[in-house]
Image 1: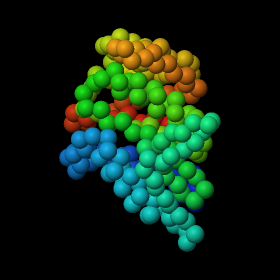
Image 2: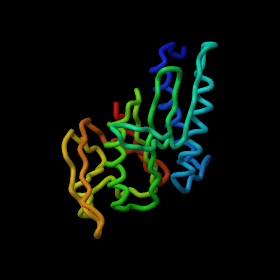
Image 3: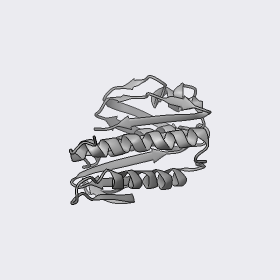
Image 4: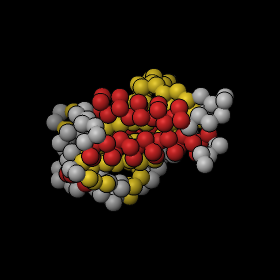
Length: 194
């Protein structure tokens, strides 16, 4: 049976949606080429699931790509925001082709941003064709690690610079596990920020 609890139902929608998009990308049901396509298709999958998880007459599921949020006097955008009744989730997505240090900076930046969001649930999702994020290799990757199996503890990370850009530093207050999965040349990472 589907849970009657709004938060559990939204967690189930996010978890099942992630499994669906991973399977479709790994097996050719989708052929995502960039982050915009990832965002579009993931939002559609979540919207469809959300509709099916509305089991009570008064239930309402909404989804908003690129939601504008003001927190702490600053404006931020969330890649996807979805709501089931009174429970709201913020999702940040990455879809890098090949490995870049900019993506490592983006991962830490998104985690830091999600920690500041007022949403009930916060998730980070990444799909890539590059296995190199799972190991160290560059100067930036020695500081902003994303290794397979890494447990990232609360603390300060950085500073790092790329060329003349930087320095970039991040403060994280949660613990994160880099539990990468791989299938058919695609590599997947999801992390809960709540």
